[in-house]
Image (cartoon, rainbow, N blue to C red; front, top):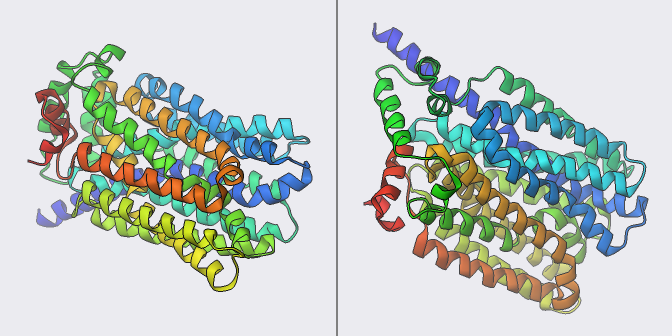
Length: 462
């Protein structure tokens, strides 16, 4: 009997990790596209003779689609379920990737980028939401962070693909290969179960119980978990009025604040324009700049793995505060290196080190923790819509930062731009210190009950 219990525990744990790993590929789509455009744009702008303004639009077009996807995705996830929504996003992404690869002119390419963006906007929050709803509380932080690990891995893979095809300047292959991970995601999710919490919200209790029996370890109180979810649903209305009401409003402020700060602190300008920044720092050829950028991607992956090991031990708040402090310092240092006239040699390498330290600090804090927290802090009945709001602000901020980066470089200079990002990072640290709760070790229903009690966010860890 003991051996049978061990086997059941092992199967349940492995199934949860498998479900989390496959759905996390949704983050991989985001990561691959984010990274590949930074390599491809070096050749696309030559192929289509782009001005700096049109270059910004080309890079940022995906964000327009992502904003639209964020708006639509929440309702889709609540009505049709997390699993079906992820499968749909994977299909849209595959179509958009092939579209961009075959584009004969820039306007067609930009439309394809918008289509890809819709898929990314939907998958970027639906995947972590799905993971948070199937994961046991003790490893929820680690499993949801698999989504961010997939983002960082997708970026590294895209840099490698970019480097391989940079020799021939073949940006079409760079863009078209994005259809591979999206196909794997769609096929993989086809064989995964629906979110048991979503099933309970749709009164499909027997199906939810069957899935929980498969993904929970032996001896788990499955009926108790179902009852907790049902009780929380009895106290929810699921309307926009409730999302904006006094119970959910503090969580909404936390989610929107972190969504905006994750972007305005400059991370995606680093990812989108990393090869350009390395060219600023003295790397002359496109291939050498892309190769140097791979180092940034590897640091991103490694530190995300570190964050995954710490998030359920140390907690969400400490990692956010440590990461934001490191980001502010490294951005200030990066600005200083560019402030020195004639950046080259030793100063060029200092810029590279500062950039890598910045990415490392982001990867241990704001990178995974933002997506984890917004998958935890909202009530079940409005989770899809509320995460959609936070994701809308995230992609909207991403769009603003993406289309203004080169303009800021022209207006404020390279050093001034990175100093501005450093100041905004300090503001993010203060916001986190004042408002962001610690959710480590609490069930999603316990977190919801805290908001219902009307207590301050920082009292959640009591």
